[in-house]
Image (cartoon, rainbow, N blue to C red; front, side, top):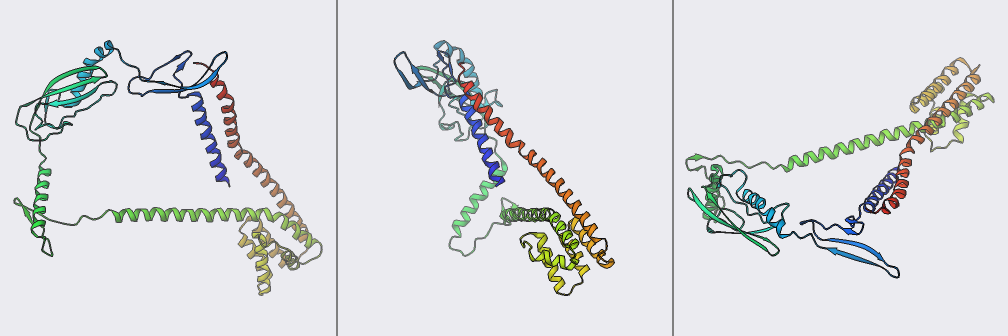
Length: 394
């Protein structure tokens, strides 16, 4: 129940916060008095739900605005910086001298610029459509790159050159490739054989083979440990919670039990008769009276009366019941003289302790209510402030 309440309050707060954001910062937040601010290039068109009213009519409409279009002068001004950054992106920042060992990067757009770029080269046998290397190049191979820069009706052709250097080959990758080719050949050659033999040597280098161990076993073991730990901890937590509830139930029932026992003994009943009397009308659902009934069964089984009282206190395992059991067992050996007064005093102490426990629970309940009250205050704040912000015209 508590978890459901917390989830409900959390959902309410999140929903209120989202509603506040949507109200304070609506999609039509670009409206500034009698002006509407267009989106810059790259942010997409703007659609604003609006209400318009005149002296006689009122209607709702959706106002669609395209992105702001750059002027010819603005295009001319940003073109040099765009070309400079474009070349740097194509050849890579590490190849500022125009000599490229790896691949080129034919980017079609750059962040912050409205241009779209397409590429052509004079060596399609060496450079692919996206700038990838297609073939081996000799030292000092110069490639011409024609970049067509487009923006609506604007067209500009920029030509620049790069020098392709032979690619640096990874010896390990080459060795692996040759090994894969050899294994493919062996597999085809031994297709009719029951066994496929692994090569023991390749290009003068001896080979040692072993099956790679699967990591799934480790993952399964780790998951098993995690799940077991969660289950163990949850069971431990549940047992601890059950023990706590049982102790609280014993402490809550003790004052009434001590008072009634005191009254029965004062009325002339022996300790045994008082215990039997309480057990007859006991609520078997309460932990304290479960132990009382169990003590009665021990008496019927022949266990000594003193041991029964001490056993009840030990099984209840609360300071009050251990003290009560010891008090009855000791006075049983001494005789019942003065026992009524002791029992009345114990009952009085138990009632005082109960009042103190109730007072502490009341203070704790007040503290627990503080968080929901703060949430309600936040909701009230949202309800008040949202209309206030909505009425402002920016």
